[in-house]
Length: 375
Figure 1 (cartoon, helix red, strand yellow):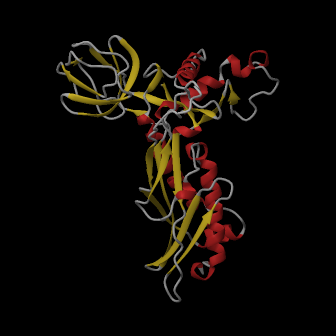
Figure 2 (tube, helix red, strand yellow; figure 1 turned 120 degrees about the vertical axis):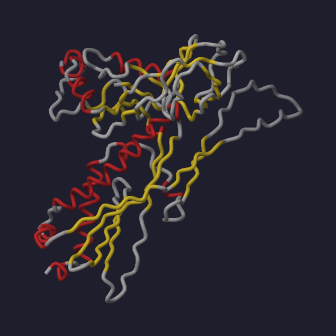
Figure 3 (cartoon, helix red, strand yellow; figure 1 turned 90 degrees about the vertical axis):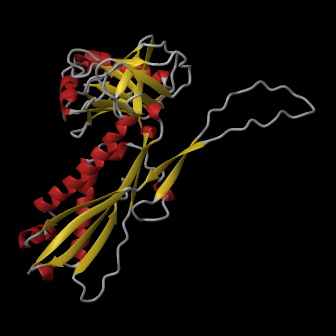
């Protein structure tokens, strides 16, 4: 019976319902920059689209003269988005599931498959926070237990970094959001500034940012530990490497640290037993034997702008069905979000296997537009 019910119309219906479920489950995938997908020319794993990052330009005084001034050379850079993530979620669907499709209901097993893909996309995007270097709050302490201090500190850091004002987003894990929901500034109308209450358990747009809860917020496990000291008497402003000694444990990518005499936080790009490559470049000159202190393991709650991360999702090719071949495919693109999803049904040993798959990639475009609110 199942084989008879598997038709092109059924496939189209299932993939469309799955696409809506995918859109509803995603948080990061909905808010980051999706403007570069139209530049993708090849719909295969490994395809790349380069995002231009404009160079800074300094205004100069106009001085009329018969000889025009020299044109100031600018060198824009680019960041590649590589479609290196190809995820599949296979499942079996019985006759009952097919009948649910016919009634306009997404079967539970298909829903679980969509959940698997949405989790993979969220995890991939959350992991991009390892590129951010700005850090507020206290590792191991959930923010917003009694005040908005962590957000106000993050907002100040964002403003100092010249983060885009609109739109900004606060991404919180379940614990941090639970704390924030209990703050009087969000609950009491006289402090909130409006008469609307928190009816659906959502903070919404407050204090210059839209507050969102995400269940897949990344927790960074710190690696750098022990006594780590600057082993260089000539560290200069603008250096991007730090030679170290002292017998500590070499850090790993994403570890956040400070150096004695410098209030800037830095993120580790890579490390050996003697050299750390970091971002941003050193803001001040560091003294030989200055202590390097790493932030402990922490949850990466975030204040980000839309342009901090770029995300691209390419529609996979819908192959032409061959008469008598034991497989069928359907591809759908969501007009509202631009997300794309493919569903393939394959005949196996006395059963039909269904599988959603998606192709995507991401890259951090503006590292200054992401502030970690530690938890």
